[in-house]
Length: 488
Image (cartoon, rainbow, N blue to C red):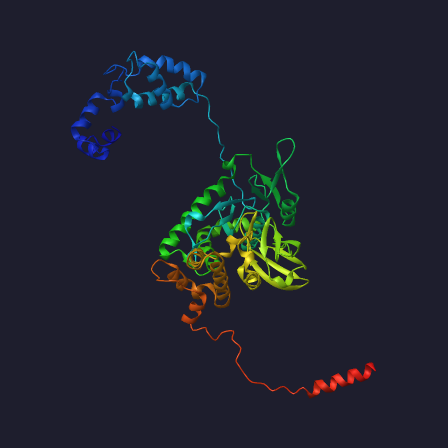
């Protein structure tokens, strides 16, 4: 209509409005818009299919607005089954009617107020489970979490691989994030994880002293969210999903999910994060201009414990039993407990490093520490409390079953201990495939570890060459005569 008033041409006006000229002419002659010409539909074209139950439904909804439409409909249908007042196919109609009732008479929903983010103020922290990525290390699934830090203004993010939602993983991941950023925001916001907070008598939660010492070292203020209110940590919660989708896409482009080592996977993760942060540089610069500088030193990223080595050649670290070399029995060792490993010291000397186990109340037994002693006492194997830990993988478990079936329980156990000794000498990878082949149903007859050694041409290993010696005992006779003369 405005175009027609300007040009006076119906066809041109119709083309501008993208309608047919006849339709345009109708509206111009009437002088009304389409919505004004249409009459409102106030009559029913068919009987109301839920009229027989709607009045009762309204009363029940008024008493309990949280009732779901489907459950309420099925309940009322059962109540009216004998009278036949409602057809069970009217569920969708009933659901729309309940939705309309809620819009008019239902309770108010919670209101979330959009917040203005200011640069350099808040970093949010959260853990997210990354097992769904299916990452493997040399064929074995890598079960891990990602400790994730996000700046709320620029959405700059950093993540580090960890094993649990612990203070150790928080200390390591937060320090790594801050040093990657190169500055410190005003506040750190975190959920009510036990790594940061603990329950107090009144039912609320307070910050742990160790967590507060970490935050105060960097000059930040600790801030938590409401209990069971993850939406208050919305930036990092949202970025958790975006990060895992981004990693999934890069893994698909890579073509395979297996890595040679955990360090190689960590490098892959760093590359993905750097690419994600590239478009955020300008806003990150705004944040850096108002942030404080990092302190001159980092906090230690480990806990230090003193552990006695028991007569079982084991130590107990955070509810987990670890085997150590038997030469340490009776000594007290110092253990640096990192998120992913243990470093064992005697004094200042590093004795060995062990991979740290996930969870608690379990045992990590390395057969290499014990196999020589088990061969001296083979009867101890049958009832050893950590016996299941002496099967490095499924192949060795099948080998044990085959050897016991072929040679009997006692002789088969002894053969298996010799197999572990061979694995300790050559490495599991060197014999695993051959052991799996010989233990399978396709291998005819019985086999022994001695036969395996012969097959691998290891007969000469460990044998002492024969030689004929004619010892000269005159020097010993002279020494003996001197000692006898001295006694006299």
